[in-house]
Amino acid sequence: MRLKHIEVFNAVMLTGTVSGAARLLHVTQPAVTQALQHAELQLGYALFTRQRNRLVPTHEGQALYPEVQRLMSQLESVRRIAAALGHGEGSELRVLVVPSLAVSTLPDALQLFRKRYPDLPVSIRSLHSAEIARAIALQEGDVGIVYGSLLHPALHEERVAVGRLVCVSRAGDGAADRRATVALDDVLREPFIRIDERDPLGAMVADQWTRLGIAPPPGITVQTHHIAMVLAERGFGPAIIDSFTAQAGRREALHVRALLPEVPVEVKALLPQGLRSPKPVADFIAAFRKVTGGAT
Image (cartoon, rainbow, N blue to C red; front, side, top):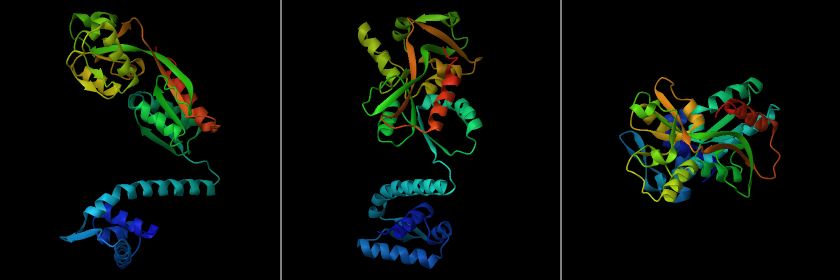
């Protein structure tokens, strides 16, 4: 398939009709029809069947589409970079960040960053720590913001901030809520909202159960600290999350207790090893460091 064929195929998949694809591509309907016919002739099989004035992808068309989507995404990235270079601008800043910090901290850091770089394109993807590490190692992002140290040979780590694990629960739920601290062992022995063990902090909590020689109590397991906090606010039980996420909670709805003994939580910036980062990357890390500096 030629690039023209791929663009037409993608447009028909998005719109479902020849007329819609023609409008999307700013070409005539006969041009779309002709391109589809040429593509199918080259491939030796049909990509669409017509059903009630709509084009429905065949089995082959459905199998081909995910790869076409990836290619179109890469093509759009090339176009953006080429346009930026033509105007003497830098390419976009690609930020990868764990979901909880994307909700609780990223907006404040981005607000600071925007004061210095109001026109720089910024791309933000929310992934889990291990996924971010792999993406930065493959240079699919300029900077990754994660929990903890991942010790990847292709990555350079910079400490951004140090917080701690806290126990959060709905304000006013029982006498235990009046305490300012709670023993980690006590929380682990009762049902609470857990973070998935694929998360570094979720893995740490699982390790504590092993050390105590007890089985995890039944309860709710979630993927992100932010979801755990929201469920705790709604009264589904206590949750162990990081202090950065807890700071973003509604103070009137959430009671935060320090865990004893204290368990530090590091936020790290991941960068490709051996590559000199552009100044906007350093300034973004500085902005993130500034907005998390007061977290304890």
